[in-house]
Length: 182
Image (cartoon, rainbow, N blue to C red; front, side, top):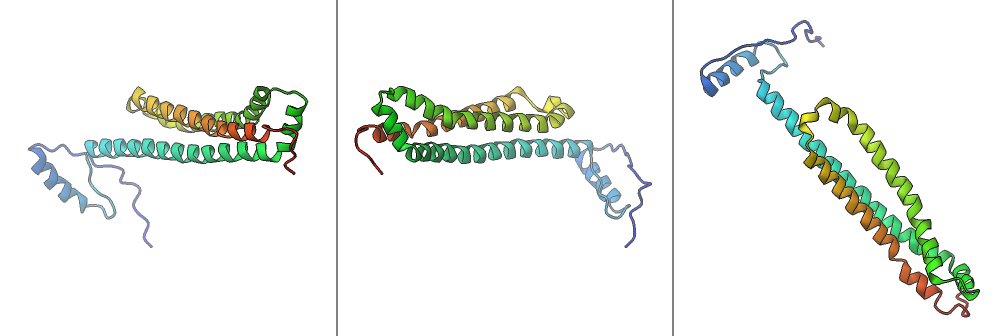
């Protein structure tokens, strides 16, 4: 297989006469070097802008999928923790532990690991995208950052809400502490 000639880096041509002349020049230049196409600076900018839009859209998609998994995980973890410890919760209520204290412990048990994981994930995402933002700071507007931050905030609120869904289950499990569920 022949190796492409790496000595030819770029040919710069100035074309006068509008879009039609530019298209004729592009057609004439595209056949000069096999495997290479002629493009303009605006072509490069459009491609770069589209790539950044794709990165933003993909970032939001990954963020949404991640939070969907985190919401399901929070709800399942909180409910299973209450069910696994129902006898302990019932005995704690029997000796006079307020339901509010048990609920706070349940929330911390669910929320603390999620908070640590979310902080690690957001930090890793920020560090991995820092090079892209630093390379093209003018193309990353404050609006894009606000959209991502708003999505992250909404996700955290939904995760906390999913964890709180086990509160009625805790109340039900500790409702009659003299009754043994085992």
